[in-house]
Length: 218
Image (cartoon, rainbow, N blue to C red; front, side):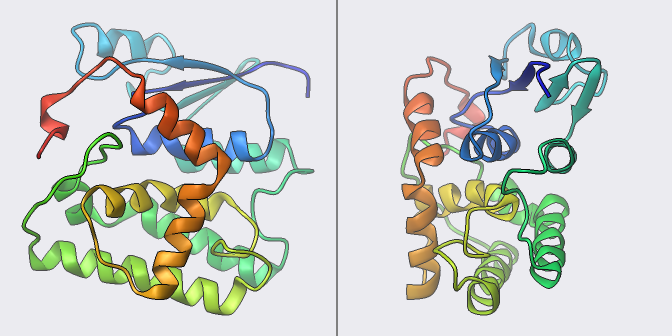
């Protein structure tokens, strides 16, 4: 396809949902136009609704097609650019990758609420049992995927995939909030943080001028 890809996102420092398709598209070498709509501004809601009636980012615009929601965007990209590496090629691994991605998409609310994404700080907080249960489940997913499907590389299914894009914001949260990880999970976390697309996202986040108080817990 030659039609321009246009990805509308929020602040790189804070927006975990925006990070997911941006990483996947960047990791797969797609050329796309990027528009950042900063959160917490007087005109934020109106600015987002210029691109999507859902009133949320990210939004992918591709010709006359508008796709909102991170996971829907990832699936659309996998169908549209099927020559790229989006999901594992093995059917079993691909099914598990989709399942763990959907689990991340719909779950882990305690973790999200207590540990908002902030790429520019190191923050110490007291965690409750629900957050610890969420962390334990994330680590269980990482270990199981790595042990069953990760032989071909350092990521959940060997090569970097949509599943890693879905879990990358959690990696950043664990870094921000100093979550202790076992050796296997630490190795995976380090691999994600070292990925060129993730490093590029961090670099851009550090240069953003916007500060939103509710994400600045420390």
